[in-house]
Image (cartoon, rainbow, N blue to C red; front, side, top):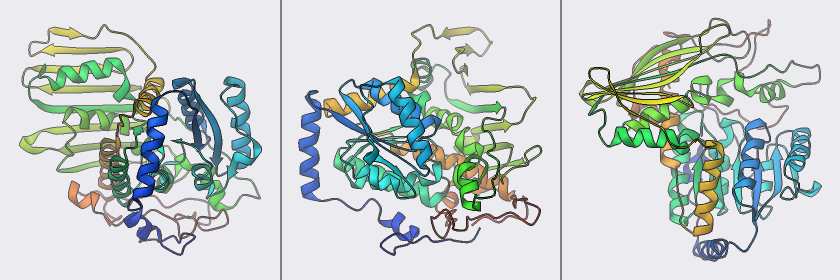
Length: 442
């Protein structure tokens, strides 16, 4: 795809924005943040929450945020579509009437709704919007001195990942917390099992297998006569690469994050693989991927994901080492075996809601004045998914350095509902789909 630029209100392009997004900091702001953190740490004042992105995941995250701190209130909401804001506000008021205090003046819609939420006097931002927009929204939140819960994946292209890394560094400098929606990092069973692996229970890791074989998870919203092409794609964001990153980013990133975790947070050297589209008829994304990630000393991560009806569901993690293996079926079992196949350890600890625990951690960090920052691993896991997509789309082997420095920018020229999106249908309504061997790496 050719490079695209999008002008901001100041006339700067998205490319300029990504280069400078994390560079806005000052001594006065730092001082104000120090005062704010001190006050919040006392636990006697209200933490105001702003929700950006009012879909199902954003709404659930807002509820988790309120439940994490009873001295917090949801005071602002923003989304591209006002009916979604109003509908989700009604639901949230029903679920948590005491802490949902969003009035009509704090319901924002449009492509600039995110900035209005940020500027509304909130302390904590919940980013539950379409993945394409997360780099921009995170940068704006950090520039304004806000703590952030950021859903996964955090970008759909390499320029977006680079922006996330800049924002991560700025948040660290300002003492702000960023908690990622890679929720398995907060699951007690996964934490305990991964600690066993890190402590050498399976020896030196030689191979990892990640599978996320699933059915369809998103419905198609039919086109209506009054819909523009941009609105149609925005309402069906899951089905378009420029908005979702494809399902190996949007969903399989959870599995890739566990592989990255097992490898000590170190990204792969390169990747290659295959993928395609057999049953999907909507949008331009694939329905299956099979990617191999290469690490030093011939260590490999084999990652498989699929979204097709009528197939077996298989969501598992397998780590094979020099002393044994570890198998995890999230939510069911977590085992470690020796080389003879004898089980040597099984998790028998507590069960808990990982979606709630990640918010509990965020608000506890804010109250204690002890920031936590998940920014780097959420960026690297997202980049692993983008790298895999690049390999499948092009049919070529691509190094990590090539991928993370890619100049492919999936942005539209403008953000308006009557503007032209990056991908357009042909006369028969079919969207161009990446063809290995024809589609080129950028």
